[in-house]
Image 1 (cartoon, rainbow, N blue to C red):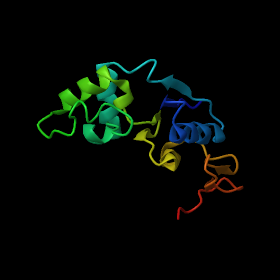
Image 2 (image 1 turned 90 degrees about the horizontal axis):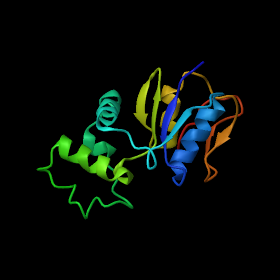
Image 3 (image 1 turned 60 degrees about the horizontal axis):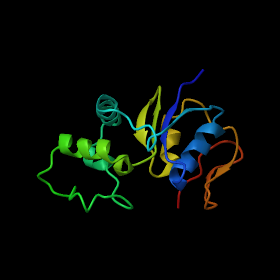
Length: 143
């Protein structure tokens, strides 16, 4: 059994597309709606380390208190930024997916294909109609 976890926001189209791509691989993931159940500090730090990306890359600006909290200030360190995400989970960019092959911030949604252990089981198009996977389960080249 493949164990996949998605830190998901059901109001986010990218997050919904990633969840659908995971399901298209034949796996029902563990879904953590991070706005209802945010990760604690240790889990947040571990996720960022697993993704091997800067903390700033995990910060979401659009539709969040990013500007109000002045999180673009270069004097803020990683702990300050993590504190802000813990206090305001909406600042956490999404979706984050964890599989046996690694962890990834899946933006764009097809980035999840790089860490899914099982192949796609059929064609898949995003909510906007863009085809990502063809009928043979192969990734379609992006435009």
